[in-house]
Length: 190
Image 1 (cartoon, rainbow, N blue to C red):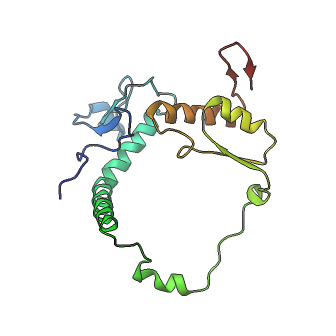
Image 2 (cartoon, rainbow, N blue to C red):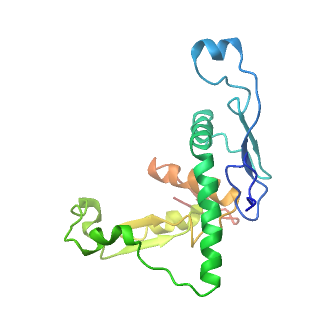
């Protein structure tokens, strides 16, 4: 069965033209001596990042991109195999075959087991907020008095390149207690 994603593609976020792909390079003498990947102006050697959005070097640092490249090199074949299996499984569902537990996990399903205790930070969840990762919503959630805020990068955030990168910036700034927002009328919150 042909794969829908070329073997050099790590991922694509719907609605954006964003790919991270490995490109053929000739390592420099310096990088070979150090045993690592050389650092060109914007991205590590072996990575080509194309996006129609604002630069993301503060989030996708050279080290982060190097890590993605290592993950892609190590797991590319497995990732593509799983995508093929996912397509096949969807065909089963479309044909009316319902999901069930795997037979090889029956002993786990039927045995007696427990999980670790809840971490102290999550014990009191009487009031929690889940919301998108745009700046204003994060600030409002953190100022709401809720005991827990869960930044939702899935259902509450449209997964476009710029939304995900901006969301990472916003969470980073919130954790550092440096998040602010200025509304179009000049009103500032933070």
